[in-house]
View 1 (cartoon, rainbow, N blue to C red):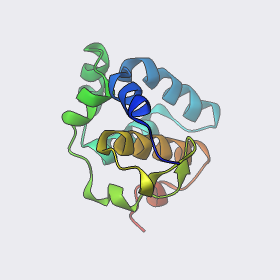
View 2: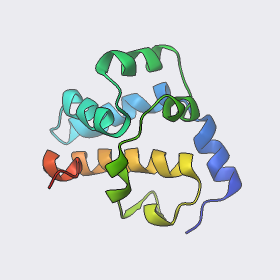
View 3: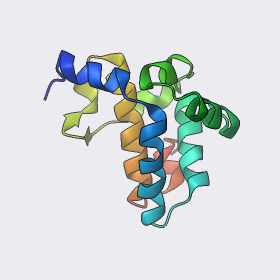
Length: 121
């Protein structure tokens, strides 16, 4: 399924601070920790815990979030379907980066080993 311009615009303007608590709840409900969530975010973006907190406090959009990120070059290894979209087929860079994050968090919540999530093995 291809993303539409309207979908890409919604992703661009969505606020990271409003989605972040849902990420925390999702992983904690499945027995994972906020620290593990931050490890995943750090791997994808290069952000420290302090930087994540700053971005939340500044109420940045996902566009601003990924503009400030140094996306891991191994992010291209993240494949599969998330939110009904095959990641490899998404042509909008920002939408693809957001889906990378969604996929990593989904893998964390499903109990996948951290080495596999971080594409180290």
